[in-house]
Length: 175
Image (cartoon, rainbow, N blue to C red; front, side, top):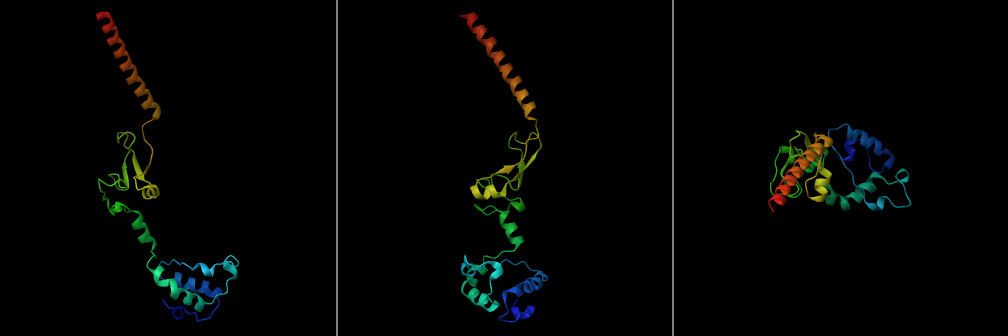
């Protein structure tokens, strides 16, 4: 979209960019902007910049083509985040790679890893941690009560201890 098409003429001060943003926001497009470091020196602030649109366009001609391909819509970014950075499968489409550590064998959700799904709880993939560490990370809670599991484990341990004691007594009686 050219500046003349939205009603702005060359050499207008930067203060009129709000008008440009308003006109651009009324269209149905997503827009992200990257500015060169020279425009934001330590001695200036965004409110005191007095560059004209021609100055900005002139600066953009030098670095614009390099960064124009990196601009993504929010939808494209969301789709990319829902994909494995290691093997490239789309978790949003329930695809996984079984031998990929970032996939971890599951797409965006999985059965509880604490009790291997016995509790029926579903854990969600932590996308940030999965991408950052290249290993599957999950958030969720086991629906089984930790107290109940502890009691079951204690009962199991005491039954084993009693069995060992009775066998030790039999061994000592036989010798």
